[in-house]
Length: 344
Image (cartoon, rainbow, N blue to C red; front, side, top):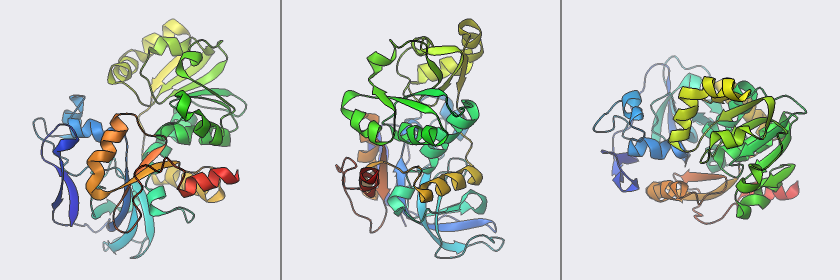
């Protein structure tokens, strides 16, 4: 099978399309014929081995132990292990492979039965592949860590990004009043996603302390500046951004909470089929929908990751593996996502 492989750490130049063996199966695993994947920030951190701590977590201090990246996957069941009961060949499925060894940037991947969920019926494979990692991060960041309640005011930083674009819609589904923060040229997209108010980053730091929750998916500025716009007792949840700020919250969150009178936490997403099924149900009801900015073929995974690193993307980037169309600069307008939002 074809796969995008890396044998060393570095920039996207270390990724190469190669012929490799199909992954082995166990009694409880499902062999998935991959139709689509997607890219997110975790891919380039693993690709570069940066921060260095990731090399200890996933193995491979000098060379990567994980040679085929890709966490988001959507495809068709090709074969099942003897103990598999929920799926059969031909079933359309999707999954988050973060805790299953990765491997989505390939034509086939072996996935534990417990990680798979049937694909939403109203999504293409490319659209479905953009949901798991970012959708689960948004859901768990808002509902579990952020403890968002109906009627509360939430500020979503990075609202036009992969996690942010889901977070705006999920926060509305949970009954919150949503303010999205993004670059000026992306504000129209955030409005279409359902935000009640949209502002740029400079405006956000000069707000009165009126928010109950901040979900920060793009922490590239001082965390303390964000805390100033939270009500006393409010919550700040970091989902993504610059690594120095991530470790600041991870290591000093309790102290920052005590000093500020606001709760400061970071999200560690927990992939699970129950939450992925909830996202599937919301998608099929039209409550949420992935905003797909562009789609690349498998051989151009390095270009897709480069675009994401350069923060050129609005919403999500899909990877087509097989017969799905290639649209590198569609900016969301040629996708079914845009049609869905236009109907709203």
